[in-house]
Length: 271
Length: 331
Ligand SMILES: Cc1cc2nc3c(=O)[nH]c(=O)nc-3n(C[C@H](O)[C@H](O)[C@H](O)COP(=O)(O)OP(=O)(O)OC[C@H]3O[C@@H](n4cnc5c(N)ncnc54)[C@H](O)[C@@H]3O)c2cc1C
Ligand SMILES: Nc1ncnc2c1ncn2[C@@H]1O[C@H](COP(=O)(O)O)[C@@H](O)[C@H]1O
Image 1: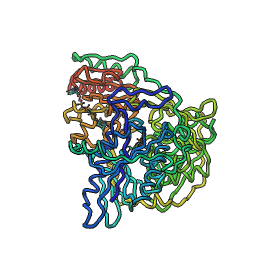
Image 2: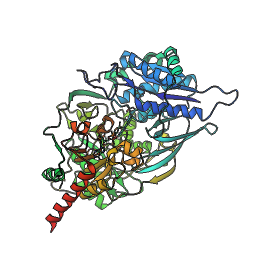
Image 3: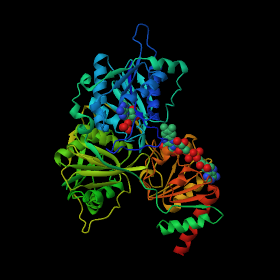
Image 4: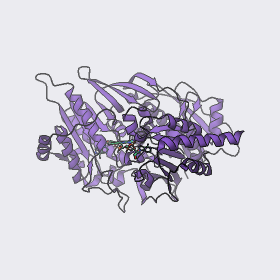
């Protein structure tokens, strides 16, 4: 089986995150990390192949970590390799900078298609959201770009390699669903069911020396005009730190706080 | 100004979800030809639905039926929207802000060469006629404004960012001829082998409730007092991930970056520390109230009204006080 896991290097959400003058998120700081939710995606990918050890004579499984990002994003790939991914692919090109989610999905789609031509990809796994932009757009957009079935926000994934099908369970806002589709597919997984393993020390060491394949847009056959700032269909016009909420009140309860709060709620029209 | 604006109506059978009235109100400020797209899941828009949609500004209702695939799949919904866009070319489509809505927006943007902004709290047309969406980003610590270009602007809008207002002289929305289209290969490729609807609750749905009472680790597992408070306020009950991980309440109640995004008029957090993962899913709340015994809890940094105290005392006392006032007002 060949599984591609999409991982993103993002500013640590516990750190002080800021925007640049041009409206892009400031990246490349020492605090940047592998998007936590992509660890779950990688965990899901690793479990998929581990559930089906290759039969005698079959090719070994390949779990590819794939990122689109600046030079510093290689750290996300190293973390993925340390967790157990077997191959790392970094799409890196100055023209990609400033791509919005849809343009990013186009680049990821071209990268997956390129890998798929070299050796068939069975499953693409993404996280449920990148904790920087928090759009949750990329997995569905990627499925659309590839024209592969979309099975998103899964909390259970079972592949049947013989039948070449996958079954997922997901919670939508209205129901619990089980969906089935033929491979290849694009999955995303929630943070509910795939608690990520901790890389072993030997894995961390090996990941530092493991090769990382770098591809640019030309290698993927992507026209630079269709990605980056100019190829994106959204453009940030303005960003500003939000002012603190005005007139904040903090009281210590001495037995009368509930009544005072009821007054406050009444004044706001809630009681 | 955009002329035709499409609104994807969230409905269950013939019952229209209240978010549609907000989206229609917003749509009216962006174009004079507001059309409600009704994806047929077995029920056509009846007279009551058309009356409601018309009252909030829909000129017409465009029913679309997609055959050959499950109606709830993202790909099916998008096939329907592509047909609607072809029948009623629009520069702007508004929809809600659930995970499903965002996936629909993503797929549509790819296939219709659109631009998409998720979780918008404002949408305006600028002097050049561009659609500009405002939203809160980075767990509510920054705000941004974004122009949406492409052939169609697809904007997912947070609940309560617009107050639903009826038009002055309401007329029922005209029913356009239903479109019937066949699902494309992506929709047909996915088979729904099981669907269990979540049991209906008497409380409003978390995602678009006007009032949400959230419990965290500090509840120690007892949500009953929070439920009582929510009921006096006509609100929904939510939880932090700690509370849902503990199994104190179902996962569907989780509020935050990886749970439900909420934007109520009133958020009350009890025994909630205000971690950034949680804040990212609730910071669009208009009024934030916190009850926490730790004066250094981060939630006090963004609460409008904070009480340093024991929730097992403050919450029931508040419920009782609100009931007392209500009783005094009605007797
Ligand atoms: C990838 C990822 C995604 C996540 N997504 C989410 C998410 O979507 N939503 C979410 O909520 N969390 C999420 N989390 C978890 C988040 O980081 C926090 O751990 C969580 O929000 C904390 O929940 P809490 O406030 O209930 O618990 P705590 O942080 O433990 O806070 C409990 C609070 O209760 C107070 N307290 C205790 N007893 C009382 C009492 N009797 N009266 C009053 N106050 C009391 C304490 O002072 C404390 O401040 C995520 C984490 C990760 C890593
Ligand atoms: N630049 C990127 N490189 C690789 N994967 C990405 C990138 N951006 C987003 N993804 C994947 O898409 C998921 C959802 O991201 P988003 O739609 O941006 O919230 C992430 O969890 C990743 O798996």
